[in-house]
Length: 208
Ligand code: MLT
Image 1 (spheres, protein in one colour):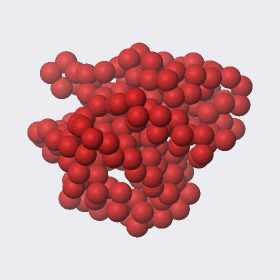
Image 2 (cartoon, protein in one colour):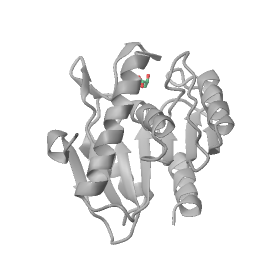
Image 3 (cartoon, protein in one colour):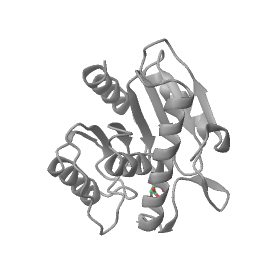
Image 4 (cartoon, helix red, strand yellow):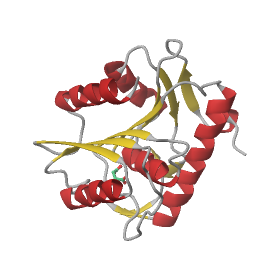
């Protein structure tokens, strides 16, 4: 059983009753840098930002990879399960039960958000994934996602999150019953101002 104290994290309560954004950093980031993004999406929201527990050459990550874009899928699944455990513990310890929870991840953080939501829709049912891709390699995900809503925001020429993988992800999510929204913009890996605008719009429409 995971306790909050066992896992480096940043928590800001936000306005009473507001959504809580589970902020998940990219490779080499941390809980502090990704939290600044929350203010640009929903300034009054709560923020829960854990730190990835894997390191690669000193850079924080969420799961191991064999090469860029080639994931250790056993580790993806195990780390997603671990993160779901952290989130469940945080909801109880911080009393977040009656607040909407939305994961917001960038790059490697988007990939762990997607993997966690696809394996544990009961724990995490809303995701904004910036520059994410299909996280399970050649494995299929089979859990139904009928009550899940996910926003995929990608650059159409992103070598780190190739379009074919995002297509595979969007198709898998839709097939599993999820409400999938997809925004593609010119350019590559990163978060553009238009991505933030799309995410704010999605939050307004999907999260009370
Ligand atoms: C990943 O490893 O999750 C993706 O390749 C993106 C990244 O490099 O973080």
